[in-house]
Every structure is written in C-alpha cells, then in structure tokens.
Image (cartoon, rainbow over all chains, first blue to last red; front, side, top):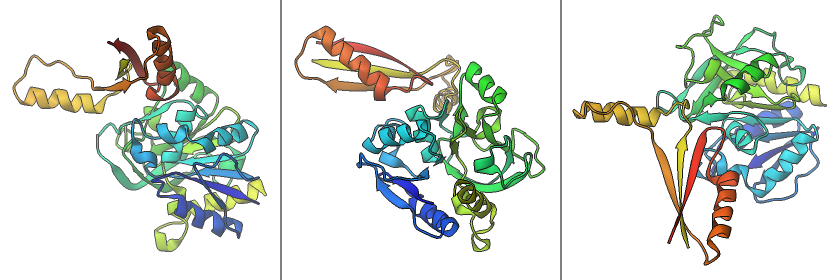
Length: 229
Length: 80
C-alpha cells in the first residue's frame, strides 16, 4: 500500500503522520510538497495538522488554493480515501471536499487536551476497528475547531450518517461540558457523502503507542491500512 | 484603481471575538452596546482597468479566496 502526506508551509503534524503511517504500513509514505502539481499514485492521501500559511485570512484558506490541492480534490472525487486531520479538516472544508466550516473556538482559547469521542457512524474503511457507539480517546490541539454548518446542511449530515465522531463524556454522553470548542451537535469529525473523505479535528496520530499515553490512534491507523490494502 | 472588500460573518454564525468585544465595551461602561460583530476589510490596489471589469474581477476573488461563503458575507466598494 502507498500513502501520500501533503506538506504545506507551517504544517506541523506531517512528521507525526509519517510515523503513524510508517508504523501501520511498514513503509514510509510519500511526503508531497504543496507547490507540486503532480501527486504520485497513492492509495491514501493524508492532509496533516498545523498552521498552514500561518492561518492567514482563514485557517486553511490559502492551503486550499495551493497547486497540489487541485489534484487532491480530483483524486478524492475519483474515490481515493482522504484523511484530513485538524488543519487538514479546515483545508478540506475550504476546498469544498467536506461541507461546513470550522470557526474560532467558542471559548476563544486554544484547546489542547485529550477528548473522548463517540464513534457515531459505521464507515468500515475508516472506523471498522471500533464498535459503533464505542468511546475512543484522541487529543485535540486547535484554536479554530468549532464546527458550523447551516441548519439544512446540519440536518442532512445527521440524516445521511455523515457525522463520524462526537465529543462526549467518558461514558458516551453528549453534553455541553464535553464539547471543547462549541461545535454544533458536538461534531468532531464528518465524512463526505461518498464516505471516502474523513475530516476530524482530533489527532489519532498522536496516540499510537503506550509511551505516548494511549493506542486508540494505533488501532485506527492499523485498521485503515488493512482495509485499504 | 482601488477596491475595498468588506467581509463579515453571516447572521447566526457565532462570533466569539465580537462577543468578547461587546463584553469589554460593556465592562468599560458603554452600556449602550447590545452586541458587536467583528469583520475585516481588505484593500486592493489594482492595475488601471475598466471599472466594471475590475468589479467583476474582485467579485471572483471574493468567491474563490477572500470570503468563505459558507460562513461569511462580503461586499465590494470600488474606490476612485
């Protein structure tokens, strides 16, 4: 299996993603610079977290218009799986690959901590390793993670089963206290309509060994790689 | 040719910065403040060209990059 990690100026989780993917795949992913207009043949595209272009204008706005993203959007439309984490999620909404937008956190503060997430929809490729309704733990680290979509779009996402993860208590309850950023319906991650693009604010690549505090992320990447191979 | 683009969050979109501004103003005793919304302006310096053509070009810039129409409204003012 081959994977490609897209690297923008001021991406800062690209190397974490490389480590997570290398651990799962047994080979290194291609690291593809944003200025490239050609994407190598790949079975998975990963868009990493960070602060591409310094979050100028809006988080993800500049990166969404960089040359490589035209190719990424084309591949996504062709069915290639895309994993968009944190700033990657912001970039994916800015390109229109995913609906909605990510606003400034409701509490105005940068939030950096582990969160409990309810696996909301069953998408075999991305979360087949988790039971539907299972609570998993990944860290968040963001200033603009407040998911917003207008009422019609939000209802559509819910009705179509496109909500991937929600912020919950460790017992799986969806409460305001468990929501770190004010996201509508506690949404932490969504799929596109076709189910081949997953965007999420939390960072599965940061919990891939016991030394890092947990292995829910390792389960996630091991399964993702196995389901694509 | 100069153009000014005003960008604001749509009604109903939470604006935490605007909220913080209105709280601060109220804290300073400006009790007339009921709410505040924060936006941004972008001043563009354009090559000399037909005014309508320039306006159409700026409109395209707003659609493609300057505004995210999922959450933002924009308006364009052509100057001089």
